[in-house]
Amino acid sequence: RYNSLVTGKRARGLIAVLWLLSFGIGLTPLMGWNKAMSVCPNATNETGPDAGTEHHGCFISCLFENVVTMSYMVYFNFFGCVLLPLVIMLGIYIKIFMVACKQLHQIELMGNSRTTLQKEVHAAKSLAIIVGLFAFCWLPLHILNCISHFHEEFSKSKPEWVMYMAIILSHANSVINPIIYAYRIRDFHYTFRKIISKILCKTDDFPKCTIENNQHLTVTNVNSPVASVTI
Image 1 (tube, rainbow, N blue to C red):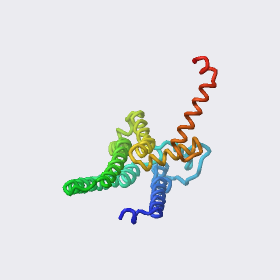
Image 2 (image 1 turned 90 degrees about the vertical axis):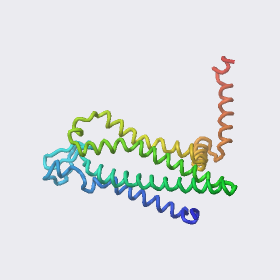
Image 3 (image 1 turned 135 degrees about the vertical axis):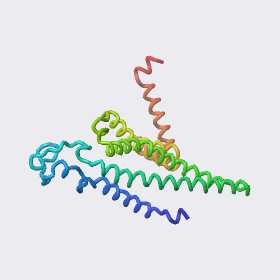
Image 4 (image 1 turned 135 degrees about the horizontal axis):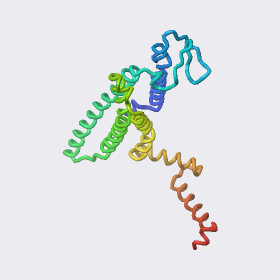
């Protein structure tokens, strides 16, 4: 049933919709949900000569917390776009593993092969790891934003390095994901190898690319003056 429901066309359409939603979420502060009117109540949106925005002599320094409101970051970004999907995905994965364990037990009792189901469980575990890493990388930043929003004294006194570390951790999630995909999911592993082969050796054959690189290195080492002296 999965193969009939999840076609290439539907997958591409869903990806396009998700990108549009992401753009909408990211551009919301530019559409008015920002601190401009609270900092400069008589603002008329006139752009100044420097990096900020000038409103009848009122200058706003272009720093994230000076421009974006914590209400947007906490209520809309965190509660609506991060926490709610995380809770839903957690419930879905718990349901998946409960059903998978039940089916594996039934297969063992019947004495049938469970290879296909094991592959599906492995894929579900891989995606669960990715979701878990997403939560680990992004929750510290959102928790700091919540504390800053509900306790203004913390917002003024919090160490800058703590915020910087939380921001770096959130961005590190984008670095970790491709590694997890390549390590845990065979199709991604194969595709990444093809991409690397095409970039380095202009071929789709990764083993051939590796052999050619090794041969090239061997010839280079033999012909180099340093190699000759060492020998």
